[in-house]
Image 1 (cartoon, helix red, strand yellow):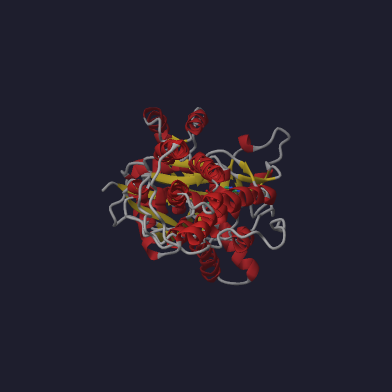
Image 2 (tube, protein in one colour):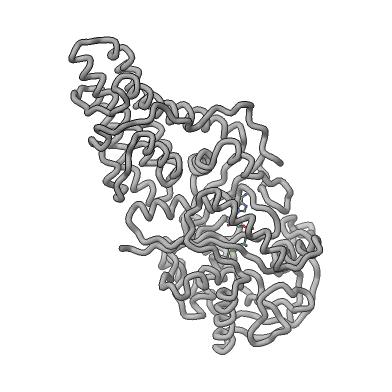
Length: 512
Ligand code: MSP
């Protein structure tokens, strides 16, 4: 069995989770579920980034200890991910002893190897980004870009990691590992970034300025820079499980350069470990062109839509709408369009037509198909094409296209019903019409089964509910489940299923 180790970014738990956090976990979950369906032994790690200035400041604001603060907020993130049916195998928190130990071991080894040295730092610091800045980061008018928030000038003794020394190694690595970053054009951006000389990375913060972090094992007057600490979660989470290197670190585009594309592979290389096999970089959900984030205060609360429309509708929308790697505009209107036309009308209606008519015309027991005419052959051809595309699309993260193709198949199935008009066939006593009726019932039930199987990794709970309504227990081999066949013959179906109900009142715009 091929092993497949995938991670998400670990979220800063200094506020409540928002749509961006939820999307990344849903996307990674869809990939993890897809790989499991393909037969891989998957290890899926997610977690919480709990140290650093931001957390310390948020805890102080509430007048509580940072640990008590992160215990509460990390639980809130985790509860959301459980609610979203995220099938993670492990949830790592950077305040856990297992993580701290690995961070200390890595730091000590790098220090012993001479990869870390002490020097004076003179420069500027952005608390919002937890990042040191240089003159070149200023805007032409001398001010700092807004993303950095308040910027302060500092002079202090610190510890530095020899990043510069590995610049040529990294450039060479990127040139010889063309598939290191998905989408590919981002790899070119990193190579472009590396045309400028790198500075060594300051990996310490004096305790008097920041207490909330992992103490440096070789100098307890300092704590570890939060990025150096956080990146190591991908390794500390599996250190004794034999999963390294990761197949994919899934991250948003804002944390590619420099943390994941520069610091991370160099840290690992200096330590003597191979980098992850690839970084999967997704785009941003935007709202009216603005980034939705805690710091700009324009966050959408994903729970609002989940409460109103259900987990699978929410998961479906995120995956259907966003082309992995690109940005997407989030609007409640667009959510409603997809909910109504694709989930309620196309899928929900088909399933209910199949269940109702089987109940009405066949006593609730699915008959076998008896005739194959042009209409059946046409529908089968649409399915065969759809099925052939599913695996290659999934393997290249084009889940949005796979869902689009599945919707096309559902539309074709609904129009097959209209053409066959089983309600008319049901009124006829002609044996030929009765045979056609049985064929129609079998065909639309089988088409429903296949469509929801195609969506299994996106809408796992709804797919399961639909299987149950068709009295069906799927086999363990997903690809075998995608074969058009006779699996439902003789199954006892439920008369109806409430799947994607119409909202009682129009959706309120998500909280701004
Ligand atoms: N703690 C760091 C990551 C450390 S990983 C070793 C961090 N946390 S974060 O909470 O700010 O972001 C977590 C993830 O959510 C990142 O991958 C980020 O790109 C993603 N998103 C945050 N806002 C987003 C959107 N509006 N849209 C999509 N994803 C976004 O960075």
